[in-house]
Length: 300
Image 1: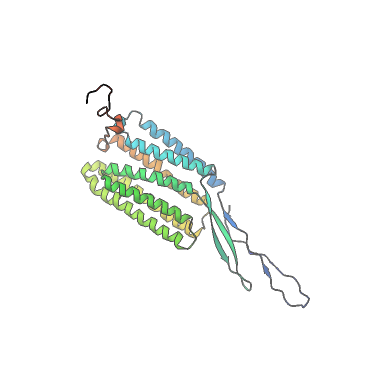
Image 2: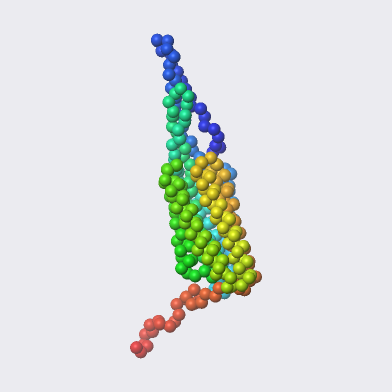
């Protein structure tokens, strides 16, 4: 839908037997629908294809890697697969709803009128973010050697950040439902930064200069991208001015950089840098150990 200036409401007047000038009748503007266009639709299918290809490439990169050292490959592959499912849902017409707001139209010499502006909201995008961003945080935490307590707190804060952004997207425009939830989402993001970026910078020093530089680069890259998300969200959902197609294209670029580009950067650096190896044995690699299994015929 091409957005532009709202059409002026039509006014009609009917002559009266007394000869007095009649009061014009104001016809309110119809509901304005801000929906997906052809450019946005094509973008969704292109990103879906890129995510599918990335998923396959991530899986191929893990082909000759021992299972015990495959944690980064598993997490990047899962991230791309989930993003693929999300973009398929969006491109095929699923995972969407409408958030409608009432807009006042001010007129001279006649009463004001109201009309509704209904905009597509892609809730499937928030499901994607709620599942994939914790995986990205776990990868950064493993790279830096962050302890489990800080990692868990970062993941929980991240989930709160995404869910409150979703609540805000469906809130009543200009009320606490919108900006209150948005503020909570931004505060949660600050907790994510503290647990991963600041704490991780101190922890990664124990892993050598190479890993420190890699974590610093990936961390800064992620920080810039993730900071762009709430800024874009605030501009789009706060004003409802950019088209839905523009919104889709901006988020598409951010998602490609935050998932496939981040994943390839991490995996290729991991392959070239032995210090980044994480050897997970036990259940992760070998399943349940034979010790402790009950065997028929064994003596107590």
